[in-house]
Length: 371
Ligand SMILES: Cc1cc2nc3c(=O)[nH]c(=O)nc-3n(C[C@H](O)[C@H](O)[C@H](O)COP(=O)(O)OP(=O)(O)OC[C@H]3O[C@@H](n4cnc5c(N)ncnc54)[C@H](O)[C@@H]3O)c2cc1C
Image (tube, rainbow, N blue to C red; front, side):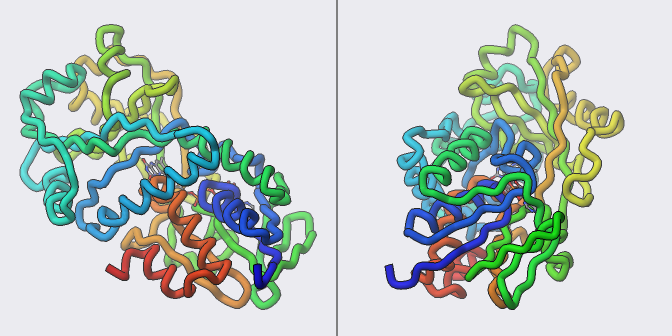
């Protein structure tokens, strides 16, 4: 290798830990700084499931990038020795003209994606837990499904350790010095690197306040349920339900490979500093229940097990960002659709940091602006 460097990476989510591993594998010295444990249960990357799909209404650039994305997961799973993607399919239902799936199907056709079109009747027969008579049609993507997020971030931590990444858990960075590549921690310690990567997800504005206007942290509530006994088997075989159709914004992760059934409502979210308001309120739970009752048959018999609050961030156009200022590089791939791109984002950011591809080219590719 021509130029061996010392990289600091702040944040051990799927993006930061992935970048650290890619750089260490290339022979660079890497130090990973994480405010909590590694992986951290409050990170966006640590939950039982994250869904993957090609359906991208209004964002054909990301639909096109899904082939690269699936290839990046295959490479990562080969290194882990375990495939953490359950290809149970991704189902997007349409209940009214112009809803999310109706707009998304046009994008799938535009990019030439393969999918199965199910009639309303097919949907009712295959998925008996859905409210009958609501769905016009549904799109089933065969290569979509569930990424077992917490198992992936746990294995990434193991890969980092094997690649001799120096992991500093419980090390919260409070500020960075861009000219020198220095991370300053809450205890006043300073660590200086050739290049310092900020991959702190929803916490980016806390570490890099000048970016606060571009990426806003967002708080989301998810709920784990036990379904009524007669639907338990159908749920176990169900696809990832990306959208239940209609104006409601509810989605569901099936209980695959020992995980639990998780249901959520995109509408129950709001801007809030990452780490704040970690409990779901009674009002939020009531809204989620109300919206689920419209799309799930006999929903009043589902048993609420627990709720969970999780933070991601978003930019106005939901495009991933790779930016540099002095010796500091910021990677923002924590948009609400960022986990499925986690392996791919880490790989592209690492290629740019290792100077294998021009930085601006990698930044344009990650934002989907080079198509
Ligand atoms: C409720 C919810 C549902 C989602 N569903 C999907 C989905 O179905 N499909 C999908 O593709 N994506 C989904 N996402 C988005 C996806 O989870 C994120 O895009 C992705 O996990 C972001 O990874 P990250 O590494 O950028 O951030 P994170 O995983 O949040 O990691 C950031 C890390 O930085 C650490 N950190 C923060 N500040 C500091 C500091 N000052 N010092 C040191 N360490 C620090 C944190 O502790 C954390 O470990 C969802 C997100 C949420 C919240």
